[in-house]
Length: 241
Image (tube, rainbow, N blue to C red; front, side):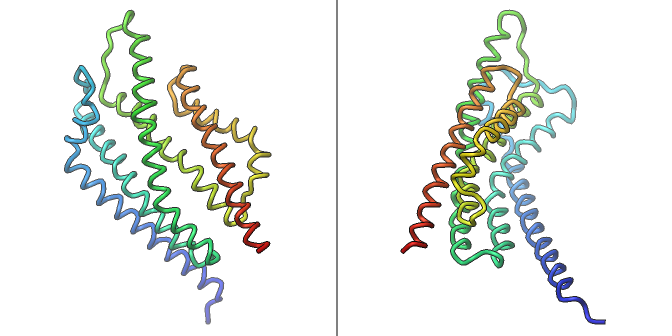
């Protein structure tokens, strides 16, 4: 019995999706293996400003720390690969102009991710850590476990790398006609509420950390609206000409 063409199409899409996922997974594994080779050097660089050694509470903690560091590096390296594989998967369904726009966004996505991580690591993380130390200095003896320290660092960096992708995502969805500046402006209050929840979730339980995170997220949303306006006007001008 002949197969339904729709069924064959679905199976073909699923096989292609699996192929794209496998390639992305291979890139992640290779990146993580390479990071593990240099993980001690990366660790020494990350703790270069510490005036004390981090504490391990169990024999497996050192492996957890090294795997966490290598995993974070692998995510940063694999992101462009994942973005390219996603583009190749959705490419047949996109108009020619959207295909070019999506391909051009891949370098931008990588840059924005690194900028977000840089903001979290070089600005937010030391600021919050300094604030926490000042609060604890007089009443407590401060000792950091390696697991808690790097968990805190990851929470201050990786989420920001993802959140800084907002302008690129908005630009792409505007080009596809899914979003427009009016919708984004109308959804501002709801978006601010969601961003506040995200900020409170990824930061330590203190008001200062929340404010330090919320303000850049609000600015990112406003920048995204401005980018959407620019893209939307450009599309309108192209249609009118």
